[in-house]
Length: 250
Image (cartoon, rainbow, N blue to C red; front, side):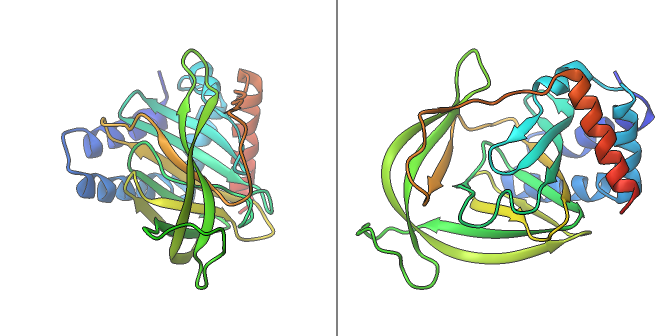
């Protein structure tokens, strides 16, 4: 189920992240793992190996797709319910601020910026009332949804849960060589902050995954379901090959 780089990555994931770690320790461990695996040479070797057909191309292709938030989401290693290691290829302008939904995740996450730069905002839900007006200092009004996966398919289901007001708590930029890690409930949005593609190594981990995530959109109503169209194996291997070429040219 893998060549030398795939097996080494699996060993690092299981050796560092398996076990019943409290969330704050799991977040720190996940950040360490993506920083180890995301160094340009090591990641290039891993992706090149996967692009040659090592690992599980059929299984990973079924869980790889063009994400609605503006990036290509390529699964590298499927660790079942505990670890999902992905490469994200961010396209300039595709997920600009104001276009991406504010959201959280089903489990703790960590991300390492391999190439380019990301911008990110963090938010809290404001406990005040919602009067439809934008607040000074980053507060915004938004429609709130619970997002889950449709049973028997990979589509996203979005259940409206009413209006909300969000308060901006952090604005940051993450250049190549930097990493961040977030607990599952942390509300955020990120986008490519340069005019060239950005590449990140992304890890979701932990056995206690939430049944849904929270999604907030300032941009207007969402449809009740959003199709998630997986890549076929040829497109998946081609995308990995293209990503390897991009990393070689960096």
